[in-house]
Image (cartoon, rainbow, N blue to C red; front, side, top):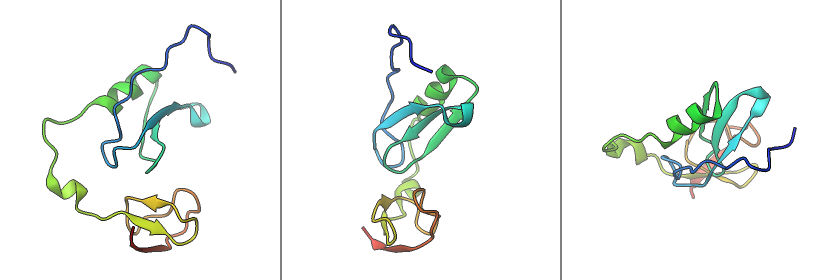
Length: 99
């Protein structure tokens, strides 16, 4: 399915976790906004709602949100911001030290 030539890509704020670039996608028919770096994903029933959720930010963020260091996956080499969680690329829980 191709996009309409008149369709406009919505403006997306940087990722709230890693400040990475976000993209709009439709995996498995579900509207989503996904960070290209840490793979944080927000979904909803339509693109406009998913984008609105992605762009919503609290007035202030707790400092604990950024307390976990970024780590490098020993399998694929990518940097991730969720130590101990499966790598989104390999699904392995093989993370090294701080990146």
